[in-house]
Image 1 (cartoon, rainbow, N blue to C red):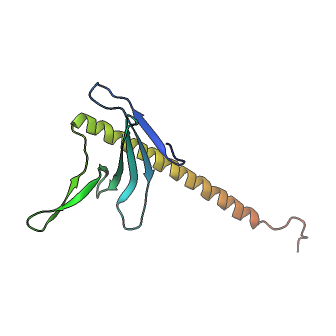
Image 2 (cartoon, rainbow, N blue to C red):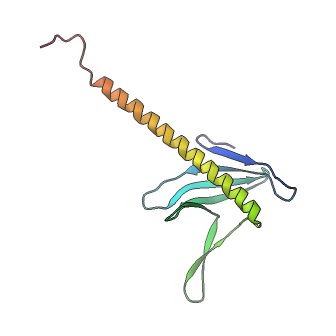
Image 3 (tube, rainbow, N blue to C red):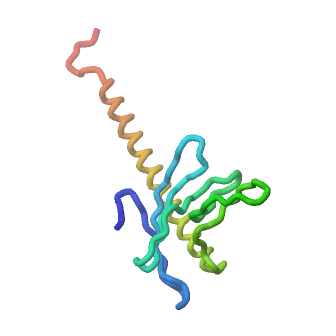
Length: 137
């Protein structure tokens, strides 16, 4: 199930009522979008929740569960979550796992980008070197 370029974080149930789960997050950036990552949650390898987003707010990043828009009587629109953690403890555990996985993936992508930029810079520098066999003028 693990795809290339994705980190997965697994968490075992701490008590009998909480399901075991693992998460997979892929960093995502698009111009003029505040979505920073897309995630999936695998519950006990039997049930998957997709379309979980990591969103950048004005102050911090947070987890947004899949949702749909509902129009209220006054014409105002509001988002309703399709699924959500029931207890505060499980929500914190789940959201922490998602954010940890996102941070790992983002750091890995940045390191790969830095390594790639360094190697390209070295290749350009080597290609600009004058041929050693030319006489000095």
